[in-house]
Each structure stands twice: as C-alpha cells, then as structure tokens.
Image (tube, rainbow, N blue to C red; front, side, top):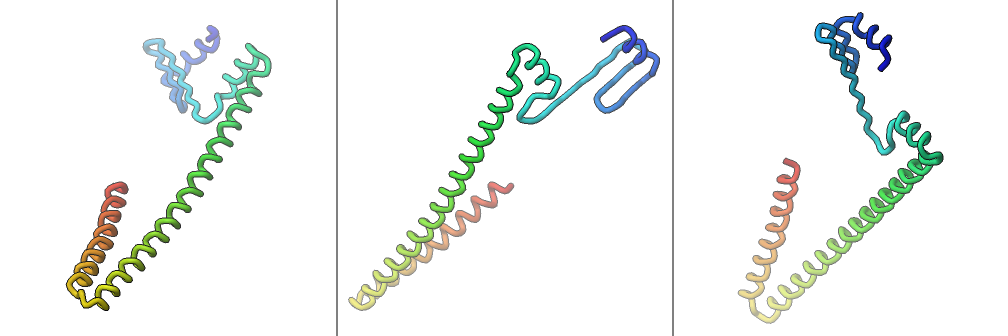
Length: 142
C-alpha cells in the first residue's frame, strides 16, 4: 500500500465500511476480501492472464465443462430415481396380486387358517413398511 493511501486512512479515524477497518490509535489497517463462486475474482483472473496469456479462457472453459458434467449427472440421477420408483410400484402391485391369489387359493382349498395367516402377515408387513419409511423420512428432516 502506498504511503499516501495509508496516510489518508490514518486521517479518517475508526473507518468501518463493509470489510475494511482502520484503527488510527494503533496504526493498524486491515482489508479483507472474500469471493465465492465457481470462478476466481476478476482481479485474480487478471493476474492469471498477465502471467500466462490464455489462462483466463482456460479457467472459463474448465468451469463450463464442470457445470455441464454436474448437470448431466443430475439428469441421470433424476431419471434413474423415477425408474426405481416406477419399478417399486410395479413390484408392489405384483406382490399384492400374488398374495391375493394365494389367499384366494387357500380359501378355495378349505385352508382358512393359512389364508388368515397370509392375510394378517401381509397386512402387517405392508403397514409396517409404511410406518418404517415415514419414521426414516421424519428422522432425516430433523
């Protein structure tokens, strides 16, 4: 920092603007900068460009490629989660139909005890899975 800028900061006692501080009693000057994002700040990009011509363009291309990659992965994840949900619904329907057929067969074969046991265990299993997944979802939210 040049002497004139430091002298001007020293004249303005207790300057607090955003992230700049100046305490004149002790002669302490602190300037803090923070930058957040996929690309470096314009000053840093300019520094890279002055050291290595074309570096800023390479950094932009790298950030664009990374974003394309992230979006592609997100699309794949969304598509597969939809496929898994549909397959789960299909297998659940097939399971209910199969258990219903078994219960119907047992009733026709005069095996009422087996039919009742199948009906009760399947209802307890289905309702238990609903309760379990609801509990897991609530525990994740908290």
